[in-house]
Image 1 (cartoon, rainbow, N blue to C red):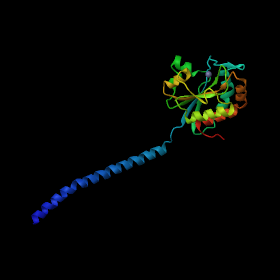
Image 2 (cartoon, rainbow, N blue to C red; image 1 turned 180 degrees about the vertical axis):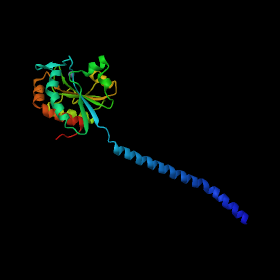
Image 3 (cartoon, rainbow, N blue to C red; image 1 turned 45 degrees about the horizontal axis):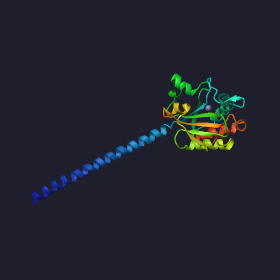
Image 4 (cartoon, rainbow, N blue to C red; image 1 turned 90 degrees about the vertical axis):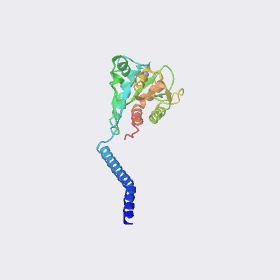
Length: 230
Ligand SMILES: [Zn+2]
């Protein structure tokens, strides 16, 4: 009887042993994962997320005048009227970093002929290009990176609509894959929007652009960064 009881006890222990081991293992894994989670949380707190970088490129330049109209060229108009205002409001932004491509240089030729330009860009940078349209028409549109406009593209189109008007031919957006200035970025997987602000050949478009340039620049910077500037 005694002997039998002992056997039963040992057998019982042996049956319970795997269960006990399993419980121990589970607790250890759980503790380990808890430690990892709290470590990650601490790291995220200590290192704030890097600011989103936008690079603004004023179209053409460096010997390429772009389109002509109303006694000026695309390159000159963008640098003389638009660039100073964009720079002014870019300084006000807090949540993102905005830099400007050297206005004396041309991103396209720097990329295609000198292996610089977009080769030097961080792939996380978003590029915003400003241009003026030609030869004839009215209004602007946004040339987009993907088949459908992003929220940023929609905000940029709203700015055009408000101050100059949209080009009826595109109704705000145009998805193009055959433009050199876009493809130097597209081939490197860099996100972009190209803003055609209006027609340089259209007297009314140029008049509206000049008259509203400060407001347009402010609204464009807000549209790019999705941040309100006071
Ligand atoms: Zn252009």
